[in-house]
Length: 392
Image 1 (cartoon, rainbow, N blue to C red):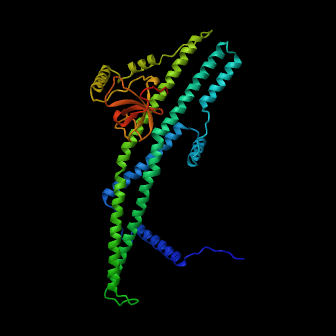
Image 2: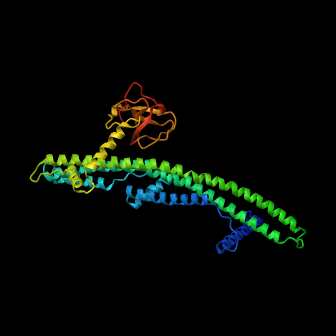
């Protein structure tokens, strides 16, 4: 019986093992302080420290945000697995939707003509709307915040970590060459070994040192450039944070609208114990009047700020209400990075929906990109529906 064994190169294995042992000995001596160590300059150390802090906090922010969006850890693990195998995530009902279904079913069994049954059905329908709002909030938050941050960690930060590892290896090689030069100089004047004079050994060691120094300097510059880029990434993360906050504001506003509508419907049902709507505006006003900071000065400054905001700048304000039948399809001509939180980030050749601002502005249009809305430069898009409006 013939058995094909792998063809091992024993010399290479011995060489790699010796190299690994030498590196371990070198690191141990550095820890003990018995050998010299090349230190990075102060600017590089500050950049590396900032990179480590950025990586640590970004990982925590992504983890915490995902925990807020999807509290169930098992569901988070399932979503992660489906994402890695590039499969669509399973559609699961939220707790609000389970509650909605049970409320509607219970209302039907209790009697749709009875006050309690009618109220349960109305409440169940409202919970269904809240569940849909929650789904939209989770999806939009992932697109505008957690996914870009995770992409930063999996892309840019991993590249920086790889280059820093290469730089550390070059540093160790440089220190090893310095030790060999130091050892060769100490052997000058002694008898030659193996037919090689100490002068020749020193010359070769100095040549290796120059090569190691050049490679270390080049890798150091590459790593510094990558570390400097983190400040640009943080500016991008700030835009993503603004988008996430806007998404939260829209989500809670939608939930508030649903509950206000539910209050009106329950009040209209009447019955032996009619529902008394809760006026949140009155409650907020009473809290403001009793708080120490809510004085005339605060109201006046708010008025001044709004006046300044209205009078400054040439960018149009986003319309509060845009009818969907007024929106048209447009193709993005080239990529565009939003300058602030009022604008949308655009990718070349993607199709979005746009409408004229109110009042019409010659530089900007109002755009809708999935669930995200904002201003888009008119010069970056071309209309696809010149004659017919599109209903979303």
